[in-house]
Image 1 (cartoon, helix red, strand yellow):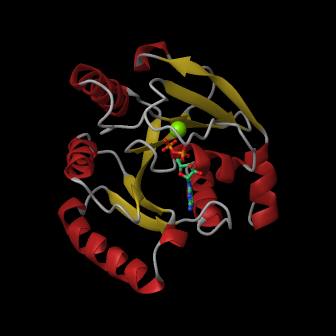
Image 2 (cartoon, helix red, strand yellow):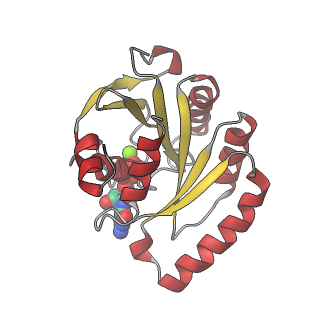
Length: 206
Ligand SMILES: Nc1nc2c(ncn2[C@@H]2O[C@H](COP(=O)(O)OP(=O)(O)O)[C@@H](O)[C@H]2O)c(=O)[nH]1
Ligand SMILES: [Mg+2]
């Protein structure tokens, strides 16, 4: 069925916000058994990516003020697959205790959510990989969850820098041979890389 860009857009365009949750245990399972999530530092572009993938403006609130989303936001796509917008980590302006709590919320979700099939870890291409990102990769890897990297906002860097980033990241990924799947370069305004991510998410249904 959905083997073209247009078909995938209409598949993802049928969507519903299921709610905000403060613990993985509160997220309903219902009949939806497949799930992926977007995780990354505050302001990396998680909500923008969700809007681009679903072709739904303002489905997830995108914000110019980092650190605002502090709960697990659940979106059902076509009643078949959930996309989870996780809180951002590593935002300096919230208290240490709050940062710790957010990490716990994220990690408990990744570790315990049985229907979670694929983690998309977002990296701002201009900022690059930080220690908190490495910690998150180690955690995902230790949970034996498959993950892909999404290098966001590639419009902000030159094509040389894109190649350099991609190369150095791929070399780092040798440490995660069992769980690392793929790398995507995205720019939400021009939809670069969005179709590839849609295909991967849709592919989870097989
Ligand atoms: N230039 C550029 N800015 C982006 C892109 N994606 C997101 N942004 C901006 O980055 C900021 C944070 O985005 P948001 O999706 O709210 O990040 P979140 O905190 O990870 O959910 C917003 O100002 C977005 O407009 C992109 O592909 N290119
Ligand atoms: Mg957000």
